[in-house]
Length: 218
Image 1 (cartoon, rainbow, N blue to C red):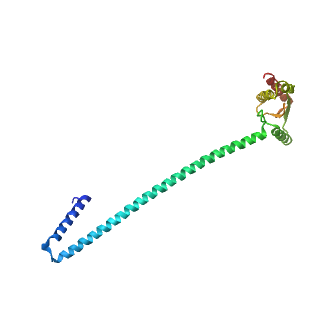
Image 2: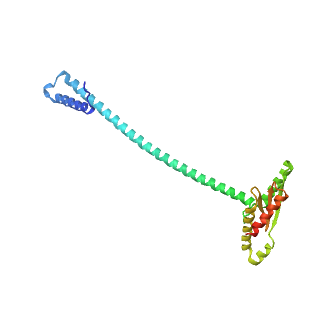
Image 3: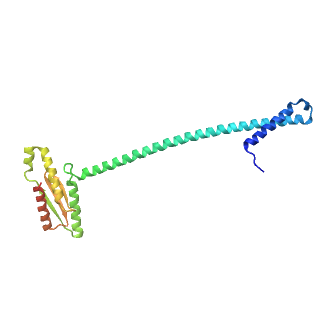
């Protein structure tokens, strides 16, 4: 048996209602025992349709309110996510800046500001650790004391700004000539120290000669 569609069923109901209304309007059926019952049936049907329309209207309003509330909550959620992402980016930048500052503070406390070489504080600690290894393991190390001759004359004749440039060039020459694992530090003024872990006297002499050659070639 073929199925009827929604529009077909609605059309059938409309036809049925029109037929019933036509019967009720026909005066020849006045006083008929079923006429009153048919009128009551039509009234109840109209009331039921009114209730259904009201329920449908309430449902539509509820769905519209629910959709609007959902869009509002979704918009609030998106804004909160954006704020959270911004806060995370700010926090990440802050952490990066903080790490850079901590690194800069560590470098400032252990390295000479002008030359970038390890400073007196760091070299003192390296010497202490080397002494401990000697006492504990019987290890050896050499310590070279380096002083730039007549450096005061450079400052007096050419000025301290040029003297600083000379110290920077001297530091680079010394740092380039030491062995891997050795450390050259600025002890103060034009004085430098180089610590050579594991070096004996002959090794220390070879490194010292190489430092002299590097400085003279600058």
